[in-house]
Length: 123
Image (tube, rainbow, N blue to C red; front, side, top):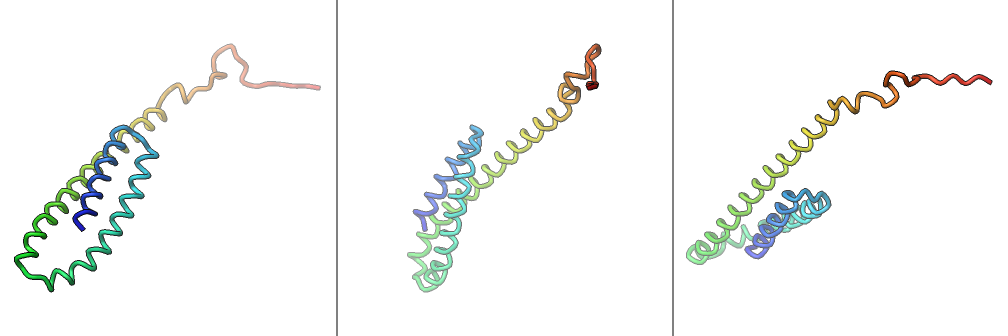
C-alpha cells in the first residue's frame, strides 16, 4: 500500500506540472492514471483493514504512522491539483468571455461604410 501511495503522489506531482504548463493531453492522461491508481488503492484498502484488525498493535502502529503520513501528503497534493485546475479553468473562462465581448468579433468586415451589404444579381 505504501508503494502505491508513493506512486500516486508521484503521478500527482507530474499532473501538477502538466497543469502548470497547460498541457491538456498530459492532464487528461494523468487524470486517467490517477483514477486507476485510486481504484487500486481502494481495493488494497478493503483487503488491508481486516488484516490490520488481526495484527499486533506494536507492529501495526509503526506501519500505520508512515501510511497515514503518506495518505496526508497525497490528500495535500490532490487539493493542490484541484486548486490549480480550478485556477486554470477560471483563466480559460475569462479568456472566452473576453473573446465574446470583443468588438472585433461583433462587427463584420463587410459592415463598413462604402461596402455593399447586399448583392443584387439579375439575369
